[in-house]
Length: 332
Image 1 (cartoon, rainbow, N blue to C red):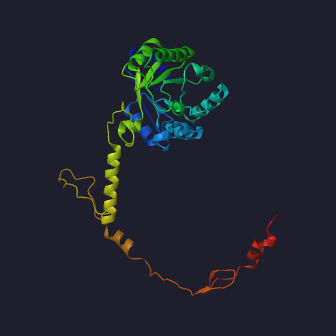
Image 2 (image 1 turned 120 degrees about the vertical axis):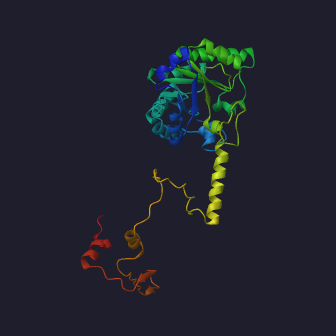
Image 3 (image 1 turned 30 degrees about the vertical axis):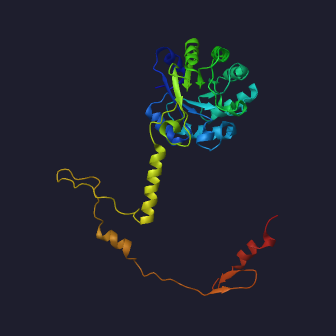
């Protein structure tokens, strides 16, 4: 398990492959950290699986800061990577300014999409001492421009372009790079060529690590799952079952019913959870009030003037208090 990004080069040399998942909230961060992951990615995929947007291009810096802060509260060991969202790194200055914001929120590294075309931004962020993770292949932030999610590296020209992007990021000093939705043989060649760790998603098994969107892995987002993602749990199904069971219990009036009795404890081993009788003195204090309860009812008078309703026995204000709160005594 990684505890610092400085351990990445050794993992590249010696293995084992990196296990990476996305994360967007505090409880999931705690669970994933305890499960032994190497890296957490607070990805702009939150736009779709958390915010219900059609793609990642609607995610803002404010969204990313908000979710990185939540994840950072839960993850105590595992390093966090934060996505720079769409149009947040158009220039080197903008890239640095927003990278600083993500680091202040709790990220240990920032990720941006693009290779050769983003070198100026990558170098500017690295010059600030902020680690950078690249992202090449299928670029989710370009889905609108490209007209969909398309596999990359199918032609020799496209494969050469991907290799050039990877080498440029590697030579600039990126600590890792996500290879998304590209031909496995191209991802394998890139992994062998560069010093940085490659993290694949839909790019075959030859990368230095793998990343998945956590809702795809645990089955909590059943409305869409990419073909390369295998659900290893059915959180959506269990949620539906539990909620329907709860609704049925509320409707039937059995929600507050006593649970089934626990097995009887032996004399040698009394059950620590067995219910104990409530002392009679305690019951009396709960049931019998110490003095009779007297309810006073005063007649209600409805006025036709500016005051809608008042009680007949409302006492007049003391003269000093009336003078203190009168409009004429209010300071300018």
